[in-house]
Image (spheres, rainbow, N blue to C red):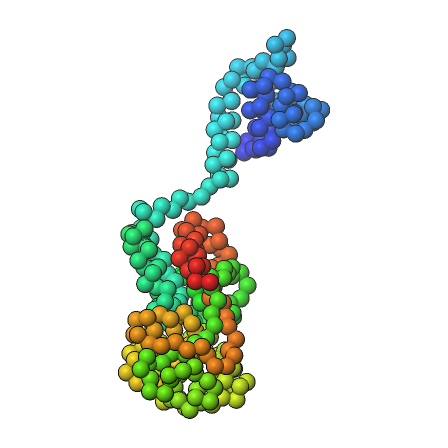
Length: 301
């Protein structure tokens, strides 16, 4: 045996089996190899350790004193390799102390974050949540581990990013429940005539703009907001209407006692997905977080 040289794993497995079975034939069967092959392996192991290791006797292959001395270290090595192959850093949400950073759309701050936070506080009290915007830095943040997840409609994320669909979105219109001119179904003609609040942000905003252009509808925009903050109160106290994805629309309508109308023209829907980088696909904490998000929000389908 040369200094620093290591035996093949298959030779260690053979040594372990021969010590138990005392039979080359049975060891070969358990290894799924032919008896001549196993005999060749045994010859290599003997040469490597410079000892016969097993002596043929009427009762089978009897171990030498050297084999008796080496079986313990051999089995420790094999057990360590088994643990190595099955290694997973344990993640116990009840006791874990770590930060999760999630990139969210403005709408998700209202629709998803409260429910996710409530679940975390109940099931993982040591977890700290940080929320970031979805922007041009999101893909790099997922790759570097600066962010753990991105949740929303983010079709521009590139390669190396896994995704899972949570639910799909269509479009609705919000109005004051006591709107003086919306006693019945909202039609395209009335949609054109009413004053509107436009939301400049949001990953689906481009889909709405494309639909308005396609349908040749020019809105009378009275107010433009950068996001959904304050939108519910504005609709509640004016006769303006807003066109927005269903989930944020339903949430704002419930909180502010607003009425929901089907969008009177066709707007392409989109899917809300969670996204994570391939580097963290098997990381136990990231996997737990993804399972929580899927459990909480896949029902929104």
